[in-house]
Length: 394
Figure 1 (cartoon, one colour):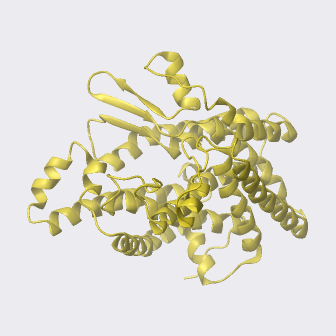
Figure 2 (cartoon, rainbow, N blue to C red):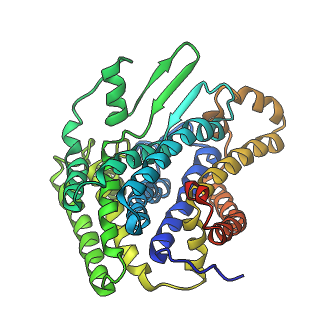
Figure 3 (cartoon, one colour):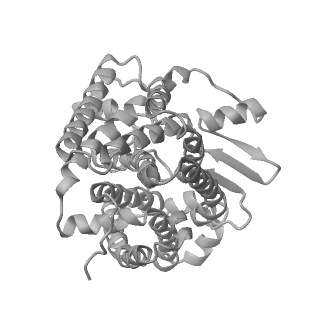
C-alpha cells in the first residue's frame, strides 16, 4: 500500500520518525536491561562504551521532538490567522499537560493511585507550546532572540539550587532544577524536564519554519541547514574544550581514552545544557539537509512514525511495559509473585529483573517492526480525515 499524499514537509517527518524509533530503544532499555534500575548508563564508573553509546544516541529524541514541534507550529499557522494559531497552540499545550499527568503517568507505572507522577517530555512540550502561543504575536526576530537567550544563557542559572516544597522551590523545579515534591502523604510529583531551555528550543524551532515557507529556495534552505548544523557542532567542540561554560558537569581526563571520550560527550539532559542541545540539534539540522530529497523504502518507513508521533509515543510505552511484565511472568519460576512485589515500584522493579543489552536491542527491533503497522493505519486514517479537527490533537 503506497503512502498517502500529503502537504507535510517530508524531511521533517522523516527526521521526527527516526528519533521516535531511537526513543523506543531508550524506553526498552528502561524496562528490559538488567542494569537499568541499578546504574546510570552515563556513570563512568560502571558504564561501557556500548552502553553509553546506546544512551547517547537516544539523547537526540527529546530535543528534536521539541524543536520540530516548534517548526510544525509555524507551518501549521502559515495559512491561519494569529488568533486561530494562538487558540490551537494554547489548547493543545494544555491538552498535552493533561495527557502527561493522566495518561502518560499511568502507562509508565500502571499505578491507579497515581502515587508517583513523573512529568517528562510531553509535559515540557505542553508548557513550551502554551508559551509559544503568546510568542507568536511578536516579530520572528524577537522570538529568535528569546530562544537564543533561553537556550544559550540558562546555564548561568546552574548555581541556583532550591530545596523543600515551598512555592518558590516548586516554581524553580518547574523552570530549571529537576526535583520533586511530596503531595500529601501518598503522592510524589517529580519535575524531570525543567522547562526554560525547552521553551527556548521550541521558539527556535518555530523560527526555523521560515526556511520551509512556500516558494523558499531549496538550495538556500540547504545551505542554511548546513551552516547552522556545522556551526552548532563547532560551538559544542569549542565550549567543551574550554570546559568552563555550557554544561553543569565539566569533562575530566580519565585513565583510558574511551572513558575520556565518554566524559567529553557526557552532557547534561535534566535540564538540557547548552552543550547537550548543540550536539543534538547540530547533527539533526545536517540530517534535515540530507533528508531534503530522500525517497526510498527506508525513508518511507521512518516517515510513518514521524507523522503520528503522539499516537506512537503512548502506544509504544504501553506495549513495552506490558511486554516487560509478561517476560517476568513467563521466564521466572515465581513470576507472578515477582509481579505482585513489583507493584510498588513498577519501573525500577521491572528493570531489575531484566536481560542483556543484546536482548534489549532485539526487543527494540521487534517492537518497532510491530508498531509500524498500526502507526501506518492511523497515518492513513488521519490523512483521509483532515476535516476532523480533533485529530490534530493526536
